[in-house]
Length: 231
Image (cartoon, rainbow, N blue to C red; front, side, top):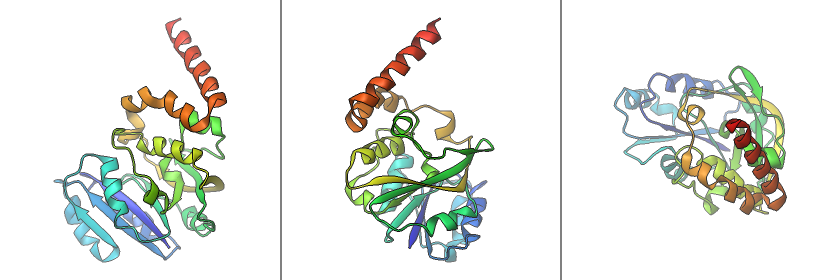
């Protein structure tokens, strides 16, 4: 069984479409958990209207996206968990992808539609270190969150930082399956802003989790990019 976590704040304009994309899935064993940050725009009323289809929802102030995600995990009681943005949509392939979940030692990831195109295919270790994975492409074993929490120091890229840690963790392996499972909204906060705290720590995170070889390669690329920008 799978839980889908949605964290919301003033998401009334998009949340119903997001929820409807879950209701349309052929996969029937889905639990929906919504953590809202005390919205004032009608989101709470929308959640009340959908109450019968939600496994759990709660509205209270939080300190950001990842604080809300950490809260949500407490209400997840399934083997697998997936995080979906309130302005994103699931696609029909999601059910086929979820039916392939077999091994709780794997972190399964697929593809998403981003800016109208399919991304990202199977991602190499270097590319994962350099660019990360789309959060909406990943289904995690819930056991991950018994061991880890999102680092709320990172307001936009805590999922990126977590996946770096998981790459190093011998208990888990990343496995790609070629399905297109979600449409990722490219106007959300993570798509249009940079996490400056994460960017400041990124090279040390690469070194600690991916090793010297990938770190040196990343550092060379970064140095070249800075030189090119100056010129």
